[in-house]
Image 1: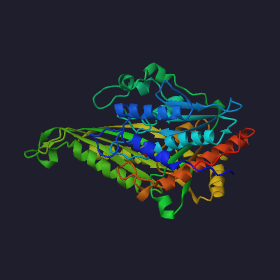
Image 2: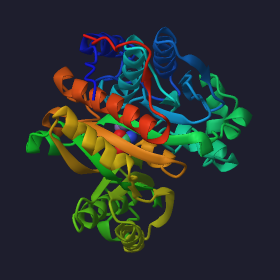
Image 3: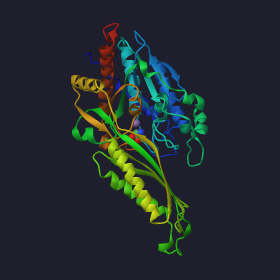
Image 4: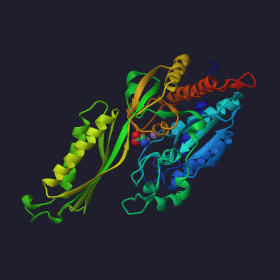
Length: 426
Ligand code: HGY
Ligand code: MN
Ligand code: MN
């Protein structure tokens, strides 16, 4: 295997530039989908793609797609991730995979290596949950998982996704028509930070992802009766806020019942927000995650029961909606074992892992073979300003990504050719 060392400084300076394209009025590094900052982030990534020699376009769903034509054409290897962040997020989630993929393109060209396959790089639109109840929006559009129901979804102000998309330069009709032809895609690979503590705890450099978590999102709306907080006796109240609070605690206790299972009530709203008023309405939005579809279904049933019990005993009405239920996604052989072999041959320690985070890879897996490569997260922190991965921990991930591409190209084509003796990139 010819060792080609990624140029860490390029990655680092591009990460720094991307980290300036954020909403400075929000904590951490905030570049939420459908914001002006997200547009700037994807535009910057497209500029880097062009500079790396890719033919670029933006599809009907806002996905930025770059192509490095192969010797034979016709078949593709796809790499990608996302540049949008959560509110108050970090600098590495998604961005590591986008900049890492672009670095792979540069290394191939600088070492005069021409793949058989076309190499396709994708910056997926809107991977993080948006205000309309959806996440992995761009990859869902590419795989045909969006429809007019998606467009009709509304945010808390009542605005629909269809009304919001044009502000990001996306025509709702083109959004519905953004299916990608995956029949020519041999494999999809995503480099990503682990976002958890396992690699650092084990002292390993590379995570070879076996399964991506299932995710069930819910939205519970409680309707009670607005009353005076001082004069209304406790036994005649219909307190929507207390019914919601009991449901939040049920999420926690249900999630504690499984292995690698998680439950989070990330958004809670009481209306009116007044310390001396019994809340008329309350909403709870959250999710369950886990490696087993059967557990997720059982958790969904148990929480629906708990919400109804918390509402009934207070004379409150509840409506429970499950907005997404993505089953756990086993990733594919021989992609996974190829990643492991490459890590071994490069001398990078590795561990097989479950991903508690969702990824575009989990959506693309319905259409082609998929593999994921993790690099460690410092203190296991992510979706927060403390999210951090050392550059020395990212470079091995890019090396594994590059060599896995070469291995897959060779395994399913006649193999990449170095037009001249490949120079060592430093
Ligand atoms: O929420 C997730 O798991 C991912 O980081 N979007
Ligand atoms: Mn994320
Ligand atoms: Mn991510």
